Length: 426
Image (cartoon, rainbow, N blue to C red; front, side):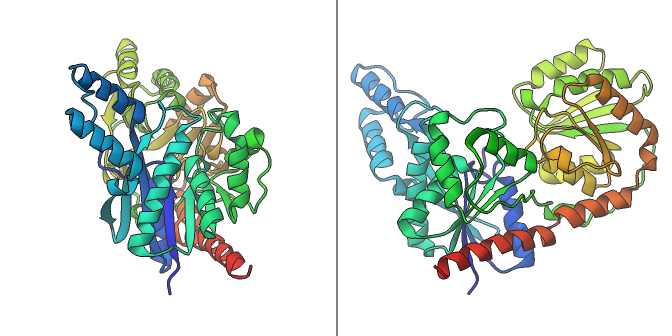
């Protein structure tokens, strides 16, 4: 019988309103299916509304005022029924979808208190437990749980293991530890969840060190296991350059941690030596307007293109059209966009912080110190001048051999087998 694995992502799994959320877990399922015969299922949790929101709206309706338009239904009786149903019968909120042959159960949970870092994991686990029970009722008890991020999926997996005896492995790829966003009140629960895992799988040594710094040495088996290269990047033939301006590409959400403002400032200086260069930014986020304004004020509107959020296939096309990839993020737990760019044969430039330190070599690109705009300018200028000296085929082969589905699947499957063997031999 194939091993039955339940995936618990902390973020939602490829929801329609945020199609890139949970994409790493999707890539991993595809990689394992390419190299094995496991049976997978996913429980995806969404917390959107809170008990206080409902109570305020109920009081407003009693006073003759309109309810919060964000809540479903506006009439008093409907609000009361919906609150009762979602709080006391969360399994009734479950919706089932099929993703490439994998059942995905989506649970609409409720915050019991206003959203906060301290209490959100409690409400997430409450919804997740309901989703787990509904999953078992529909598809049977899994042999193993693979939780992604300790807060909150790892906490739920630990709870299930204590109650049900189901082993779990725990992948960590959250930047919350590096950004010091984990409340100290959660440290004991985090330590217990990590200790209870049969394998703790941080995606980089840098992330592991961040966890150690915040909550202490993991009291379980630890294996650093990076993310997998998506299947669609495994069969790429690098295109020959067709001439035209040298193009730098970056891919990522337009957030402060991604440091695009530094990248734009550096690019403006690169134009001193390479006036025909172009910079393409793929991604969207709250900083888009200010970054576009920065570009216009620097007179770079005709040199910088903001592409917005693109489908993965379109991202790949942008990589195939570019000449080099640049990643200005302050910190990355891994850096999937880097290995995707390398699979397209691009030399890569990144800040020497977190995952990129373990990805980039002298043969594949350049690393620069955090915040050093002069070093970033030099690296971009150097690659714009010497990009043809990089061995495109060697860069592609390195990406495929290091992060391709076969090697990734073998390593993760070993963690799965050991976890199940530990339980069966206990």
